[in-house]
Structure formats: structure tokens, C-alpha cells
Amino acid sequence: MRTLLRRIDQDGERWLLLWLYGYIVMVIFMEVIRRFVLSYSSVWGEETARYAFVYLVWIGAAAAVRERAHIRIDVITHLVGQRGTAILYIASDVLTGVLALFALYWSMDPVLTSLKFHSVTDGLRVLRVWFLFAVPFGFSIMLLRVFQSLVRDVGNFRAGRPTFTGARLFE
Image (cartoon, rainbow, N blue to C red; front, side, top):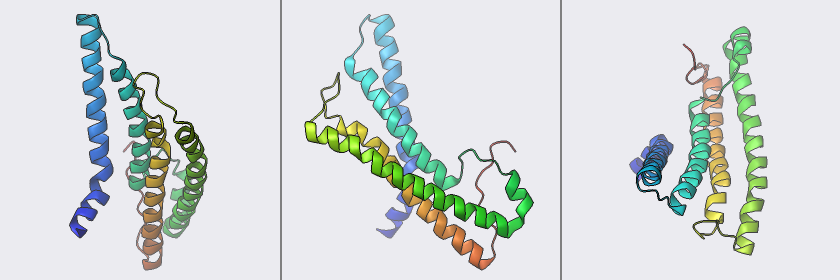
């Protein structure tokens, strides 16, 4: 069981992102063929691809928090040394966590409202709450990843190890 949890922790977002991306590509490809070859398009294709894309974005944001792959300006970290870099990253983790908590709180209102009034999607006539839940789901994963990053950064800081800086965009 522990091995399974470790695999989910390491690769959970990657597999979800791969599945969602594959689904979006497959559905859009099918819809293009249907529209231009068969002169027919489905209601469900465009709508499910759009909602899958919303989940893809929010899960991708959480994965980027884990890998520290979000866009950042690291000129300051080059000026302050290893200890200052660690403090900046810890402060960044705390601020990101606060932002994610606020966003999680405010993103639950549309979900709860949709659930209360049984709002459905336009084409599929499925409860909209399943698709609105993408935002709080993404911020929940983001909070987990920020907490893990904070624990890692504080541990590295106390042990005197260099801070995990993630991948750089242009190297």
C-alpha cells in the first residue's frame, strides 16, 4: 500500500495529465473528422473536451508547483546566496499556500451553488458541479504540493543543504 501511495505521489499528476491530454486530442480529432467528412458534429465532444481542458489546466498548475516549474524571476536569488535563497523559497511557499487557501475557499461557492440548484451543462445535461469542481480540486492538490515543498525546503534549510530550485525554462 505504501508503494502505491508513493507512486501516486510521484506520478499521479503526470498520469492524469497524460490521460486528459490524450482524451482531448482524441475527441477533437474525432470532431474534426465528423464535421468536415461526415458533416455532423456531436454536442458531447466539444463540451467534454472543454471541461477536460479545465481539469488539465488546474492539475497542471499543481504539478508545476511540485516541480517548481512556474515562471519566476530568479535574479534576486543569485544575489542573496544559499541561505537567502532558501528563505525566499520558504516565503514563496507560504505565500502560495495562502493564495491557494483563499482560492480554494472562494472556488467552493460556485460548486456549492451549482449543487444546491442542480445546475446542468448545456449540451450533456450532466450536473455542472462535476466540472466546476476542477478549480477546488486543483487548488487542493496545489495545497498538498505546497505543504510538501515547504517541508522539503525547511528540512533542507535546517540541514544546510541547497534549496530545490526546480527546472529552469531557458538553460
